Length: 263
Ligand SMILES: [Zn+2]
Image 1 (tube, rainbow, N blue to C red):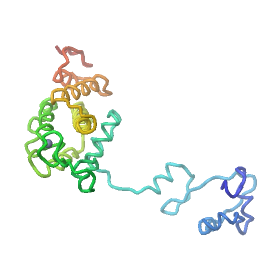
Image 2: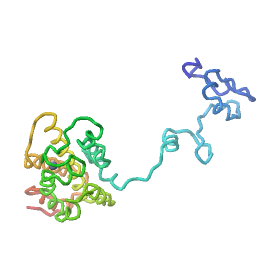
Image 3: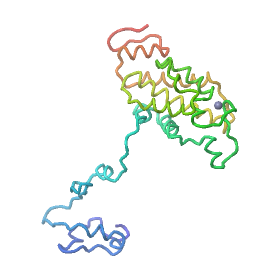
């Protein structure tokens, strides 16, 4: 519109004479089929309104949300979406977990397959190929981190069907895809899973790019501090279940909403 020098105050009446359009040639060259397809009915003393024709051909008042919903590609919502994208999550954790679930992180396995670099072994154990499955599930370093927390979220037997399998990471994602209830424990599990994946990947990058190295205990402390901090600021019902969770995560004494004191 800018290139054709049309006025910003231009109305339909300026361009439509009741029989044909008077669009500038530049616009007709590019969008003639679309611009000529609609024949408006002019109504005296009524202001122009912008309309949008939906997929069913119904004419509606235009809105950005309506247009977006019409032109976007609609795909089935994936089961793990609630584990990654929820409003109390930390964005950088969500982003790394999202990439990890989609196996889009640039692991050494991927880089070597793209002929970038020749180091393919895991930076933690220095024995196995660094794949998503290995770095997040199978490596002893990662297993030690997971095992430090599973009891804290009532998932003691969680790894029985996951670890030491070629598709352990895929199984983990499948289990995470079970629709989540909005309970206190579920929220804690989601914070935990996101934090474990984030800090494992961060540690991997520290070792490769900054020659820094932290032990499992140090990373577990960071994860635990993070989850505890989230628990304190959680936007959830602070009833007995919440109090139990706090106690399990090492808080000493607190009052819950139903008046029971936990010591
Ligand atoms: Zn390893």
